Each structure stands twice: as structure tokens, then as C-alpha cells.
Length: 464
Image (cartoon, rainbow, N blue to C red; front, side, top):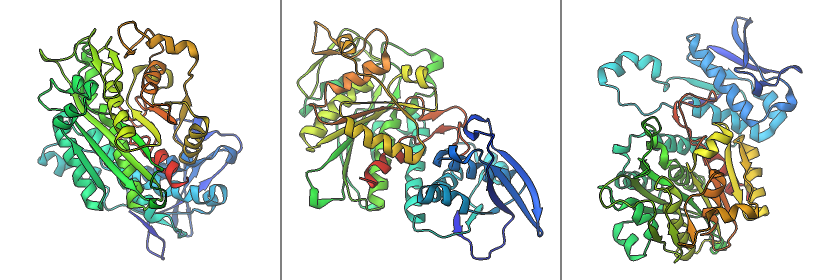
């Protein structure tokens, strides 16, 4: 937990230092130094060159401090914030708090009760206290944002058997009701009535039928027609279908609904903090499994938009379910701008690894807004090209568009989504590498879901 300091007792004082030789982001870990002064134990965290210090460095540094204090047996620490705030202002203060909240997260676990009791002292962070030496006005906002980043992580970490389309929709309804957030769940009957042939093809052969969640934060009633829709991929488990994934690629496919979890968590955070913006999330949920009724390569699907899609690869299914969701957002929810976020391609992981997500847009102004928000959060994105030659790679004589091409997988996936934007301003975000990790890449992360994207999307609308 975080408290503003009021002369309480604490175990360690945390001081942030700088030098002109180190780029902290290029080191495996921050250099920490333990000292004593006036009977107090002090931990100095070296952040390197001041010119390189941004919000990501700050989040990492405060998380490093917490980890260090814990290793030394401490239960509390006092953080000296002046240096950070003098460099980064309110952004620095919020980064300190967010790094703290996220570090103190406890991941989902289904260990037996006996094992939990044995390891409780090592895993339970509830008793740890971080004191900040200066108060500010952003604690409640940051706490709420962190709460929903952690909820996104939790949803992603749940096994596929505990996060089916039905269970995922029930979970979202429960969270939404807690804060009075407007949510509608569309079931298989609605999906068929609206002729969502792409979503239905992917999810109808599973024993767990597809659904769509529509989550609405209408925080700016004076501009009720200014609506942005976030389409979040909710593939609750992905076998690859008849283009079956290899065994070593399937174990973590419970994470294929991370885009949906992020879209939902973003709307919750906006609503909880009363952000003046109209934002909706449309989250198609399905399982991509194999049965005798499953769609196969070579099929031609009829999407809600009226466009036909030739399936070349049943493992390129996320773009299929999101295409119908995007059409729904535009035609039924009157969205004027659209975004999609998904664990979409292995190609983006091959290009950028686990540190950077791919982004694409048909509108420079909208993209600039998004990337400006990202700089405020420290989340990293890199723009993918939309050269004319790439569009030809998803053309086919059999249908209006095909769902896969030869090479350029991350680009092809984005251009497929662009086919369904109806020329509205659009930003596409591929978080396949950043949304789920086998081992923490930064000190404020845990193994599994990261919640990547929530912070930047929240910032985008909070600062509009």
C-alpha cells in the first residue's frame, strides 16, 4: 500500500541518485547501494544520466527499491520524491505510485492450500507499506488505474477452462456492476441475427459458444456523438484450428484474450476516474477449437460488413472475430474513431520481442495522439508501414480479402483490419509480444499477463 509520510516508523529510506556515465535502461539491473545515516538505513538507487530518465525508468526504480527492501527483510520504506518530481513533474509522481502498485500485485495461483500456507510469508504483499515524503493529488486516480491493470493481468492469467467466452463475459459483468458501468452481452443468437459470419465461423464449433461484450463509458454527454471504439480480441483459447499450433506454442494460448482484457480494463479505469470522454469497448469472445463443424482453410466467410473473406489459415482467427466487432461498433454504436488491440501475430514478436508493440494507422493526427500518450507512460510502440505494395498481399480472386499472406505477417494483419474501418480514423495495436511474458522484463512486472496497453489507452483519453 501507499501512504503519504506523517512521521511513521519505516525500515528503509529510498534515495534516487544519478551519474553521467550510465544509461540505466541498457543495464540488466539498477545499481543499488546500502548505507546508514543518523541511525537510518538508506538504499540509493542509481538512475544513470538525468537526460535518460523517463517514467519507465521511475517505475522500474521504485519496484527495484521494493524488491531490495524485501530481500533485506524490510516491511516498509520511505521514498524521497523531490528529485523525480523536479525532473518529470506530475508524471514522475504518478510513475512512482504506479510502479509501486504494480510491483505489489500478486498473480493468480491455484496452488494447494497446504503449499500456500507454507509460502504465505514470501508471496503475500499486503503488509508492505511505501511512504511518499510529499503528498500530491494523483494518488486515487493512479490507484484506480493500477487496480484495472491488475484486473487485466488477472483475466489473462486465468486458465482457458476458467475464462471461456461465457465465464469471461460473466467476469466483466461482475466488475462493471461494481462501478455502475454500462455493459451489454450479445450471445450466439445476436451474433447469428446480425450475420457476423466471421466470428461465428471461428467460435461456433466450440462447446463454449461465442459472445460479444459491449462496454460503454459515456463521460462527455455534451459531445455524445464523439465516440471512440476499442475493439479488443477475446480469443479465450486458441488451438490454431485445423492449422494446428505446435505443442510448444499452445501452452500459453490462454493469453490470446489479452486485447479484450485490456480494452475492458481501460473502460473501467476511465469510468472509475470520471474521465470526460466517450469510449466504448467491443470485445468479441470465442474459442478456436477443432471439431467436424470447424471452419477450414479455403472456406469463404461472409462478414457482418457484407465483405467476403477467404480463409487461408485458421490460425489467423483473431482478425476474423475483430472484423465483425469493428463493423458492429461503427454501425450499431455510431463510433467515429476506431482502435483495435490484440495479441495478433507471432511476426510482431519476431520483430520487436517482448519490449515493444507494433502500431499502424490510417490517420496521422490520431496516431500522433496515441504515440504522445505512450511517451507519457513509457510503454513502447513502433509504427508499421502501409506501403501500397503490401495491400496486394491480401487480395484474392475468391473473395474481397484473404486472412493471410506470404510474409510480412504483422503488417498483413493490420491491413486486413483496415478493410473494416469504413475509412474512419483508426489505430491498430499488436501486443502479442508485450502482453504476456514467461519471466518479468521489468521490475514492476510478474510472470504472465502484463496489462500492456491499458496505461497508454487511458492516458490517450484522459489527456484529450
